[in-house]
Length: 118
Image (tube, rainbow, N blue to C red; front, side, top):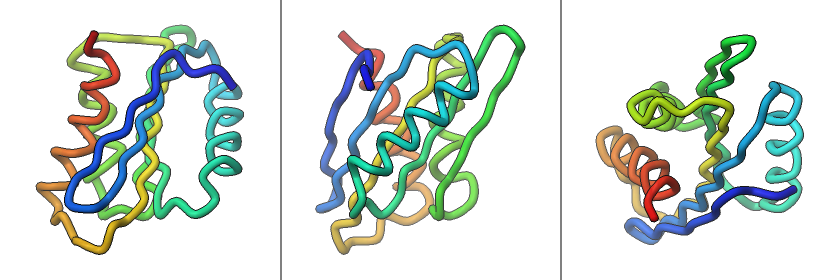
């Protein structure tokens, strides 16, 4: 699997690995998710969002994080940047310190934004 960009951010002992994928179909997104699940078997969460242009498709997945604290912030960044035919995956390894809902929203949005910087 070839991702356009990969990053790692550490926040209060949790590691957040961000992956940016250029894609044109839902099946490519599912394939990338399956790949990440095999690569990160011990991860606590693999949250993601995607936006496809044709046919128009948007989806956000929290993967066990509190509702709206992971997938929705990822999707929100994609919408604000007006990017299409992309998926962003954020793999979290819990470090033992709870971040709270606001902290989760901030770190998932930050990880996504960093994938588009530079």
